[in-house]
Length: 271
Ligand code: GLN
Image 1 (cartoon, helix red, strand yellow):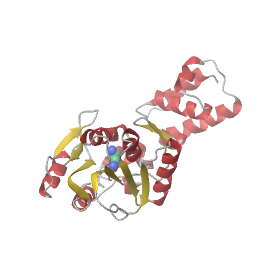
Image 2: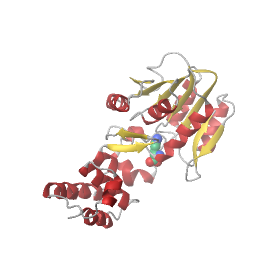
Image 3: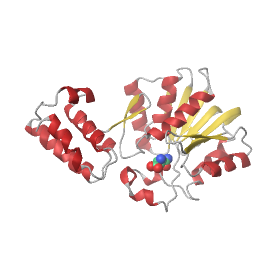
Image 4: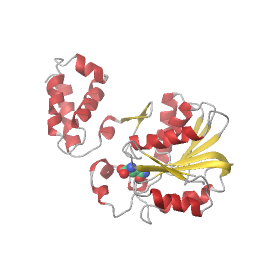
């Protein structure tokens, strides 16, 4: 089988939203190359071992496993992150949270916290753009903290530290900004039975009170961890903007507003 023939096998991934990209990423992972190489060498033959490994990856993808779990990697912001089934897979929607956070504070000596950091995606993206911020990423899951720390070391980003504990528990002092992409899916949402989310930890996805329980808890607690005039930013579901604005305003947050993601849907609310 040649690279061109392998790419044509994308037609088998009928349940994927991005069959061609999926196959390209699987091939790059297998051959240790970039996507350009695939287009430059369509006639390159896969050897027997490569073909067999490719078919095995394709079969797992057909069974629904996320590409990021098959390659162990996912691009987020300008970074390539290691991912694992222990955490949520970083999503493009979450880049809206990074953009909004960067727009709120210039570079300077600010303390910033990312609650429920998972792979460390948000914390690392912020720290890479703002070298003088001191970013703390925290997660309750030990495997997430060790994964985030591996990402930090591999990327050589010095101004982040990762700590283990539930929400505010491992934090000291006050922060100029607290960001979080907490679990926010309603446990009854049928979306939980489709696509990548089936392979991600429920604890990273689902929250009680129609998905708002953790946002509520963090918004309450953050008042004791923010400096005066500090910012709180959440990612949330496209239909939760009004509820999160109401929640923040009710707790005394000011300048409450919502930003939309690339699809034009409510995605990040801040105050
Ligand atoms: N946006 C993700 C999804 O709907 C969920 C992320 C989260 O719960 N924090 O698949």
